[in-house]
Amino acid sequence: MKNMRRLSFVFTLILCSFIFVGCGASNNTNKSLNDNLVNESNENSSKETEDEKDKLNKLEEDKNNLEENKESIEENKYIINEEISSKNKNGIKIVLDPGHSKKPGTEKEKISPDSDEMKLKDTSGSVGLISKKNEYEIAMDVTLKLKELLERDGYTVVLTKDNAETLLSSIERAEVGNKENANLMIRIHCDSFSNSSAKGASMLVPKQRGYITKEISEKSIEYGKNIIEEYTKKTGLNNRGLQYRSDLTGFNWSKIPVVLLELGFISNPEEDKFLSSEENISTIAEGIKNGIEKINFK
Image 1 (spheres, rainbow, N blue to C red):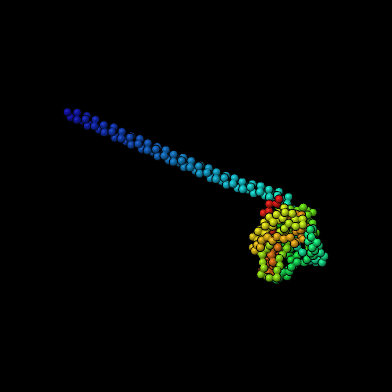
Image 2 (spheres, one colour):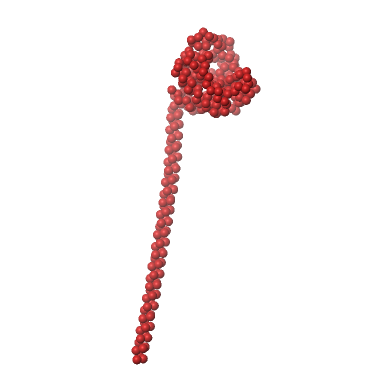
């Protein structure tokens, strides 16, 4: 009986040992599984992070490529436009006619081929109210600067004369444009009036008379409008608009589109100061050039 109890006790101890070992093994197995799951999760998380980085890098690369392509397109567009503009300008011939002369003559000439009315061939023009600068000086300064700007942009430019000393009649000036068969002749002048409060720039354009046909008149009006708008915009001077004239010799003998730009009133103290200043010559010339560039020559 006593032996049986001992055996039962020993058996119980052995059974408990097995149970304990089994539980320990189970815990170790669970721990191992948990560790594996954590590691796998970390690996997956790391992989997802790398994938996201790759996607972000790809998006950034695509964005950069898009920006580069956009810049390239804009650059090519600019080059193409410049080439087209340059080609257009290369075929355009402009005659510039600086108004008046330093020593005008007393001879007269017919105002128009269809009239016996006579006018002086040339005059010395007006004088600045404050600056005392002659109109012919301002006209020549602006003309030479405008020639420089236009030629730089690809236009062909012809001057009726390149100095204020040369005496040239209005018919002779018109004949320069006719001989060159220019796209446009621009006559450069300054305005003047007895009332010093008068101010602003004007664009004189030809009516039908003499050699001025309906087509030439219409082109002159269209071209003149572009120039006066851009000129006054650039200089800030008041735009007095278009004036339609049939009494100007230089118009009536012209066989090409022709306009006369009155830069402003040198009889007005403020405009005299502006027009006579060497510092403003470039601005004045640029304003005229801007207007020429807007013209759709036909």
